[in-house]
Amino acid sequence: HGRKLVNDSRSIVDNALFTFEVPLALLTGSDNNATTICALLPPDFAIYYQFVVIVFFQSIFNAILGALMFKIVIEPQQQRKTIQRNNGSSRSKTDKQDFAGDTLAGTDKKDVSSSGTAFLFAFGIAMPCVVLEPIYAVRALEIRNVGLIMVFLTTSTVSSLRITEALSGFAPVPTRTSLRNYVAYFSCLLGMEFDPLTGNPKRVSREFFWKRLTTLGRDFVIVSLIISFLKPYEYEFFETHRAVDSMDHTLQEVFSWQHLLNNLFVAFLISACLSQFSIGVSLVYNIFYGVQTYEIVLNPMLKSKSPSDFWGRRWNMLVHNGLKNGVYKPTRKHTSSKLLAVVATFVVSGIIHEYVNYVMFHGHGSDEDVVQNFAWKQMIFFGWNGILVGLEYLIGHWTIFQWMSRTLPPIVLTALVLCSALPLAHLFTGDWIKHGYFDAIYLAEPIVVCRRE
Image 1 (spheres, rainbow, N blue to C red):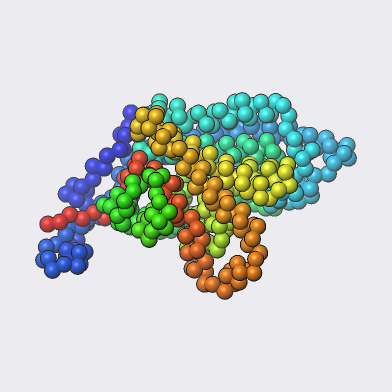
Image 2 (image 1 turned 30 degrees about the vertical axis):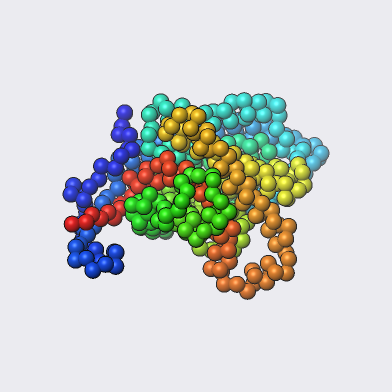
């Protein structure tokens, strides 16, 4: 068994890369002549060794499952398409488009219907495997660091959506062309880039690799600064009168400036952590698979222009694409309702996040305590944001909103988008703070710590 990586053993005396003095008056605004010794501490590198091992372990598990999915689900679909095309019974629009095609109209219900065997395998074997595997793996390996548990949960989050998209016929077109492409796609915990002309994965270039390294370096600086700043305050810089994971906030409290700013700081931290984590994982595949992966966090905290822009084009594009192909498109195809498809997508997102929280924090209390504390908070949060996106579709064309979109500065639009979600953001972030997710991430970061002399 490796180190459990729960407690931070780093100290200024033993681990400082360098130290510097800061006048206490500068920090407090007082006339005190005392100084504060600050130091930059390196990350605990043991967490990265375990991180890489887990990524490889999950990739092998997903590769085996992906091969079975291709043989039992994807390949029979493709064979039926070929037979129907040769018989002239139907002509799927997918067959007319190149490998970049990924529209709702790109598949035909009759062409992509899955057999009873495919459904039985997907929901009777594959789905239970991806849902239960992280639970048993974490227990068997005695993983205690919540950040490392999240790496395991990437499989259940991403793979479950890839299973539903395959059953519905919405797996990305290039992945359906060969067993090799699909296994590479299914085993990669991040999204792969495919050449729109050849349908093959894009190969890593020196320029691409260098760009990713610089982006990762940027994220390390951002996360380290934010987490070093928030950690001494237990991630709540401004004092409030409610526990961080409480559901008992009054209407006045959820709109108080202290509550909104606390949620904003943590939202920035989560966004930066997600970007850092995803690029770190993707580098493993860039190196060992030799293929390009796409960025999944596209500056949602500073550039979002609407709720749909935030959730649909900037925040966690990996899960977004999975929800789009695995939930939104199938729902819209069968109901012809854009609004119902949006609602279904956010409901499924809430369920997934409820599952993630339960597994990630299960070992931090009794079963009764865990169930009580996680009582549908994610469902409420994502349900609220689903309502916001639905309202955008329904009334976004009104003159007042069109005027705001054209006239207001982009940063003001972004602030309005964030303010629509921040009052309830504690439902998403509160349990992550209480049960130590950010403390687990803290071990993986170079940090600045200070002590008074």
